[in-house]
Length: 358
Image (tube, rainbow, N blue to C red; front, side, top):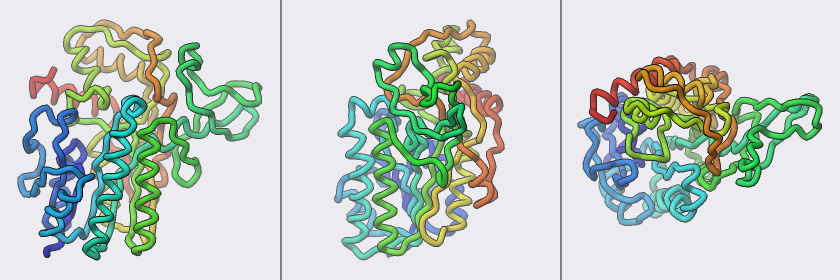
């Protein structure tokens, strides 16, 4: 049995972008992916997946998939990307998200344990969704964790967290694994936190280094233009290219940390090159907040589309604000985001036009 890099969800957006970089580790690369139609409009090997990667089409929740993988390959490095990722969708399709994200993780480690296979390093792509609404700073200087924004709260157009002291407006704090307690407000976020706990328990017992990377809003060329639940940047480009005015949800001041795919790949590779001694959890983002209104206006301008419209609509499960504190990643691995939002959005638009998607 030959040692290999095993990448679950390896034919997805991040897996394809990462695939060529993994060759530097000098091991065969095996991507395990079910080619789900929500991501893959055509059930075939993606062109963006490096030609040297072996693709095994299968469901990570099924023992038969892992038998096929482990009959030939010893998991030296495991990059666990496979997940259902719809935040709002997870509220109405909870079983699907829990099955793939939680059972897919336990099925993987059960398969390893059944054959007494112990990886040298496991890297989990987790999500900023584990933080939920995150931590906020009250006007009186205290930190608090607001409850989930319910449908009723959003229907009243009460967008921001309410100050507990009522002494002034509260301010959101950046996500930082060593300072902000995770408190998911979506089923998706709950399943990602479950992945973290499951792998921390198993890797701790087996003495396997575990890297947990909580990704902010990843975007870039190669992201599925057909998936309505991911890739707002892609969606904005496609609508603006048609000359449509973009709808801006809530009051337009939803804050997001859009991190370009190349910067995410650089962080993952740096993490794989420097395994931790036990468990390491880092946030991966640009460290810069872009409001949805600013993103929409920038993209509309690229296509000479009408001015975006603040429509007041909302989506259950969305959080108000999400941005990473980028300093721990830089201190630990020497990695900082290099691509600005304007430049990254321009590249996405160009890619969509060249491929005929917009």
